[in-house]
Each structure stands twice: as C-alpha cells, then as structure tokens.
Image 1 (cartoon, rainbow, N blue to C red):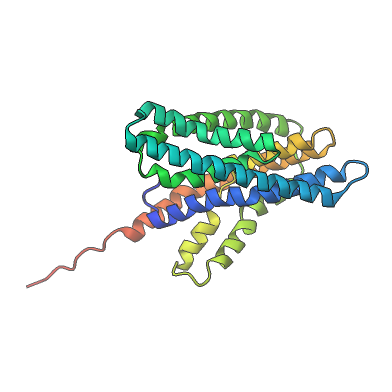
Image 2 (cartoon, helix red, strand yellow; image 1 turned 30 degrees about the horizontal axis):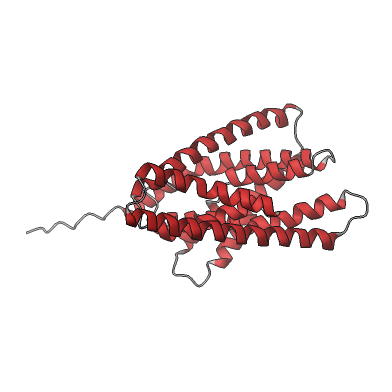
Length: 271
C-alpha cells in the first residue's frame, strides 16, 4: 500500500476493496459461525440462527449509521463554531468506533460491522477538520495491530508445535491464490485496466489482520467442540503462507512497475 512504484490508482483500489470487503463479509461470517454453533448443539434451528445473524447485522448497521452521522455532524459544527480544540477533536474521533461498537453490542448487533459503518458515515465530516485529527486514531490502530501480530506469533508457535496436516496447507495455498485471483480477474472484465493490472489486483490480497480477527472470533465461538482449534490452525497456516507468498512477490512486482513507468530515452539527432 505504501510502495509508490505501484500506480496510485491500483493502490487506492486495494485500499477501498480491503475496507469494503471486511464490512461486507462480516454478516456472512456471522451467519456461518451461527450455523456452525447451532450444528454442534442439540435441537439445532438453522432458521433461528439465520434470523439472529441478520438481526445482528441490522442492529450493527443502524448503530454505526446513527453514531457515525451524529458524531460527524457534531464534530463539523463544533469545529466551525470554534467550540472545540484540536486535541478534543482527536479524542472525539477516537471515541466514534468505540461508541458504535459498544452501542451495537448492547443492542445485540455486531460491533465490528458497526464500527466500519460508523467510519463510512463520519468520513464526509473529516474533510472539514484539521488533517491531523485522525492521527491519534491511526497511532492507536498501529499499536493494536502490533499487539495482534504479537498474539499471532504466539499462536504460530502453538500450532506448529504438534505439526500440521497437508490438507490444511493445500487449502491455505488455494485461499491465497486461485480463490481470490479468479473472482477478482473475472469481476474486472470490461474495465479499462490492463490484464497485468487485473492480475496484480487479484494477486495482492494478502491474508492479514482481518483473517486473524475473524479466525479468532470463530475459534472463540466454537471453542470446546474441536472446531475452534481446527479453525485457529487453518487461520494461522493461511496467514503464514500469505506472508511468505505476498512478502516475496511484493518487491519484484514493485520493480516491474518502476521499470514500466521509467521514461524512454530521447533519440539522439545526428548531424
């Protein structure tokens, strides 16, 4: 995302796609986890599990929209009227996802979806605030991400201690390659992107923080049934394979785009 050798348009597409996909996948993820939990209980009712998941998504969207729009309106008006200071504005922005998450969980919704929706709704108001308003939130996100990767490192040690199955490794390789590459390439048919750019967008979909978060949530929800340990193992190996594949390929791809953008030498005029 920070490699400026890659065209800005492609980096922006990956940035938007990464944010939207997490929010769109969350309700589907909730339905799958609810169905898996019901499957392992006596007297399973899949219809009820589906309704609960849909209801949780609805509460999440409603909570996120309410908090996001209200916070955006208050921030914009307070700054325009001179009622707040830059420090208070940074703290207010930091509290938006926390408020959306808390309200959604209290109402029975999904906190992650609510936080995502709140971010979308508050974004228009950010154009009218100082550029460094989100700096504190960015710093906290960086710190939280580092803590999450620290936890992931401990999980790697635990999962690899007793070995792993070849089928899980094969699934991880497919999840990091064809499972993303083929749908993205097909979805981009008809656009003005070149085939190399389409392949780049399909390939550069590393499994990282979102995969770790979703995997941990599923493992916690299904703990005690054996399924939680299996999901944690699949998640760990998939992310590890992604780190290797995408980490090794990022530099060559960056060099390739740098060569493509290099201006050709002007022809010499011989007299």
